Structure formats: C-alpha cells, structure tokens
Amino acid sequence: MNPPQPDVLLLHGLWMRGFAMAMLHRRLRDEGFRVHQFEYMSVAAPPEQAIARLRKRIRALAPGPVHVVGHSLGGILALLACRDDDLPDGRIVCLGSPLAGSGAARGLTHRWGGDVLLGRSKELLEHGLDRWDGHRQVGVIAGRQPMGLGSLVGDVGSEHDGSVGVEETRLPGLTAHCVLETSHTGMLVSADVARQAVIFLREGRFDADT
Image: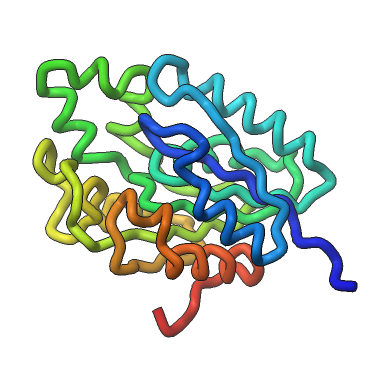
C-alpha cells in the first residue's frame, strides 16, 4: 500500500468562499492528497487575523508536511503565514496571486466604493510583498487569458488573466513560475492548473514542457 500523500490547505481569494475551490479540491484529492479548505473573511476582517488562524491550522496538521495552495489574495496570505521557520515543512503554490501588488486594486481605490469593496485587504493587495525569503519552496502559476474586469479599472500590463498581470505575479525568491492559458477565475476549474500544482507539490518544479 502506498503511503498517504501530505495534507494540502486551500485558500480562496477576495470576495470568495471555500466552495469556489471545489473542483481543485476534488482533483487534488483524486491525486491522493488530504485536502482541507481554509475559509476566512477577505473584506471585513484584517489579514492578520486570517494569517494567525492559518498558522494555527498548519500547526494542527503537524508533523507534516503541510502544503498550501492559495488563489489570488489567498496566495499572498499563504506567504505571509509561512515566512517564519516554526511551521511544518511543505510547499506553497500561488494561483494568479498579485504578489508584487495589484494594479486593479490600486485603480479600484480611486473609484467610488473601491475602498469598501477591498475592505481590510486593501493595503495588502495594493502593495503586495517585496520578496520571498522564507524557507518553503514557492511556485506561482499565472494566467494570460484576458477575461475579466480587472483590466478595466487599473493597469495590469499587456499580459494578464483579466484581473492580475503576469508581471504582478513575479517576486524575487520564488522557486518556479509558469504561465498558462487561463483566466483568473478559470484557474479554479482548469485541469492544466491542477496538474501543474500537483507536480510542484510533489517535486518542487513545474512541467518543463509548459
């Protein structure tokens, strides 16, 4: 009998709930991973609250390894939660996460109601992170199918997934980065995205043929 695969925590993005990750949940589970949803309030509660809860959840699944897969804002929260060395080992996969800051978020703040829509995640989405210097390997999957409203409210660059620019997903210190033909929300149901995520969780790399 094959040994069980590691645990994987799934983090949804802004304005979403855990059920948005249902298809990815099923595909990872079918690959043998023990998959768990992590729900948090992306607008009404401060990111620090979600980060503290995530760290507690990862510790509860110890001794690990405990992987984390985060979509959009969820990927940023995953990096912030795992940058210290006091958690079980594991890898992180970010799906369309604006790690370097979101042009769409910055554009939205200059429109009526933008601050309300972004809520307590506003500053984190606007500015992102400077670099990744944690001990975990981090892989990022970006999309370049421009289907979404993000490009209408802010500058996301010439290559984007409709909400997040490809360049916005790059960050110094990443282990691997790949770009797929998918939109921002399409990542959640894409078989190609799930396949690449599985490869990275197991091997710390993406398919060289991508």
